[in-house]
Image (cartoon, rainbow, N blue to C red; front, side):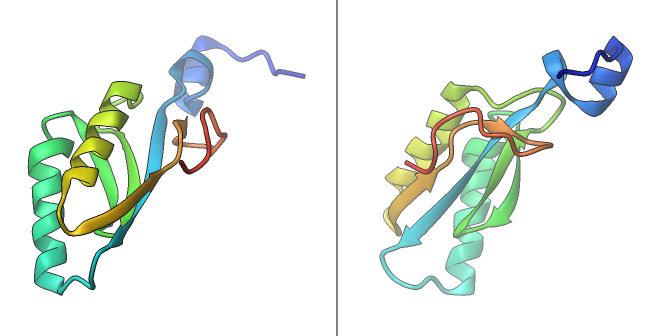
Length: 114
């Protein structure tokens, strides 16, 4: 049974129309990266994709979770942009990503790792 909540409470809890979606990803590398190479990869990811798309990122070079920087969800096109960028990198052999999931409560809203 779904609880009846006021608009203010739904917004505060980030449920219903205020739900925020994000996705997780993980990468396998062609060879082990040095700390400097990992840092350079993250710097490029942040400056070339995450910041221009208005996203937030938690994690490191081998994977993490991506959400909207401000309130709101990651769109499917933003998800595809990030994955396309990751797959284009020479040092990355394989990238797996979840579908869009509830960023606050973890309920799956898409496909599993693909």
